[in-house]
Length: 438
Image 1 (tube, helix red, strand yellow):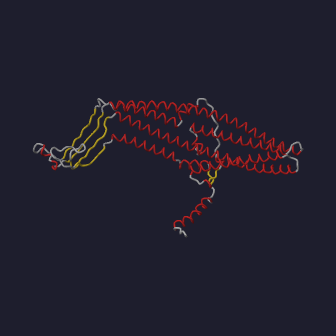
Image 2: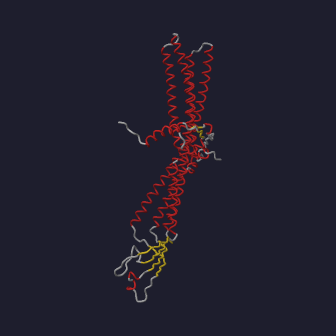
């Protein structure tokens, strides 16, 4: 039985290979660190969510503040009555009904408005902290990808040298100069380089995929420019700077503003037990359909009626409000302690990063010297081979040690960069550094 394909299926089979071909053949795009950060900030969902929260807080503030602006409602309450006209949803049956109402004196509302204003600051600081988080993630991924790509270049050269060494040992084994154990050692060296190549390729692919997702650039065409990474600023070692930095940290500021907002809510809940006064006005056009005239003295009924005044409330007894005050006090205490914990954590983290930068820089300097010594040792072995005081295996051992020292130096260099990036985020200078701001 011959199966006939639909036209849509045939078109899909024709278009799919073309789409795959075009996606694979996209031109490579060199992306600088600054451009990658800008793209990440544009595509970050976390920043979009934080911005939405900020917009929501601003709208909540306007909602409370506008309670002092008279609210105008126009409607009608038309219905059938039998006997005295009763109210329909709080208003007398009327052809036209206009109500105006606004707050005049409400101390609780004033505190709630101030708390809502603080919430706007909280969300703005949260958005700033989210931006710093996105920048840190982008910069770290970019710097780490640069590390792995540099390592790939070095490992590819080392792989060629190790393969040549293995071939030379195989010839020496055939000639009876070296043993089979020497050949096994040469193969082991090749296998180790191959393993490190696989590790570097895997790490580079994962980081490139991550950068592609947060920037919106296809991974196949994403190419970094390591030279676009700015020079890192010198780390400051002032013991008092950690405390000051904690106070300037967006996360700490947000926690402090949240604690103050909760305090204002407590004040607002307490003042909700105080008297309030609202402005109120109402106009109603009554009709004879509802037989109003039957219940008024002859000639006293009038269709147009208006009332203007103030509604005063004295909340003498309200146990539910007392419970809300206790809830607000518990939330305020929690927010205060959380703010203190956030500040202490930020101060400790800043101090830890300051000390870590110095420690990692010293470790990197040691690794740099060890790598230079290993390179000099390779040259010394080559010189000794010319005078027949060293053999091929001595050279292989020296080159292997130099490669290990190079990898250690790369890892420590990146750890220094990681600590410096974290320190710049803690001190508030990461965005200026990454985007080249003065």
